[in-house]
Amino acid sequence: MNSKFDEKDFLACCGSKKFAEEMASSGPFANLDQAVDAARDIWFNKVDVNGWLEAFAAHPRIGQNPSAKHPSDASVQWSKGEQSTAMQTASDSSLQELSEWNARYWKKFGFIFLICASGRTASEILAELKRRYLNRPLVEFEIAAHEQMKVTELRLAKLFSTKVKDASISNENTETAAKKAGEDRVSIIGAHLTAPSESAAGKTHRSRPPITTHVLDIARGSPAAGIEVRLEMWKGNQPRPLFGEEDVSGCWVLEGSSITDKDGRSGQLMSMIDALNPGVYKISFNTGKYCPSGFFPYVSILFEIRESQKWEHFHVPLLLSPFSFSTYRGS
Image (tube, rainbow, N blue to C red; front, side):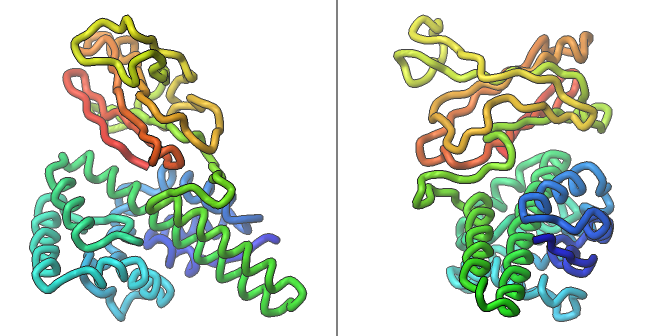
């Protein structure tokens, strides 16, 4: 069943007017997955910096209630729900500390601290705020954009769930099935965005490979296209390669390779599997070919995925300049 929503509906999911306009013109969507795919493309490829900042500004600061003057009643209610765990676990002192760190964050970065707060306690959010405060502005700006996308996906799931429930009221024969479909969609997205765990069937339903990357050329301020990327996994007698020792107890096995596109994103680096094999992975970038005069002939990033994380998504980007690089775990 195609679901038709207007700009106001999508503005409740993301406070960028450009995002809402593009989503409304791209619809109707046959299902939630189709809407989420469109949302990701629009948010990362069509909404500019001003649109990102507009979306950030539509959120209340963590620990504060949303403004009653917000143009979307649905957004206000969803925001309260998303912060409910934080508010229920906060003390007067932790709320005061959140307020102080929110102010510090704003002074450094110029936008509010944004995090997908659903299911997170006040202490967890405060710890993340303090950790991210140490980031460089460019890195933090992109992290905030990914957190906004998490919130958007969660709210799209709620939007579609509401549509399903409305349809079920008008058709008693399909009431049970429609309601269950809506709840399943919310649970799938919600589990992906907060703390993924195994479902009763032991599987999730991915719409993208579990490990992805992109490259941003921070010297030029643009995506880095045409960089060769390889994803490998450690296999051997030892569970991981040992620092400072020769790799005689195992080897790296190629999972897949690709080349970054015009948006700096790699193609599919591994199969579309539900559960990742726990272990140590390595993403390597042929930076020397991209920037022959640079300091790095290539860059390799090693990271470990544990058993408890095998249902999660791992986005491991590279922020590159001729003489420096950095990375972080995104989503």
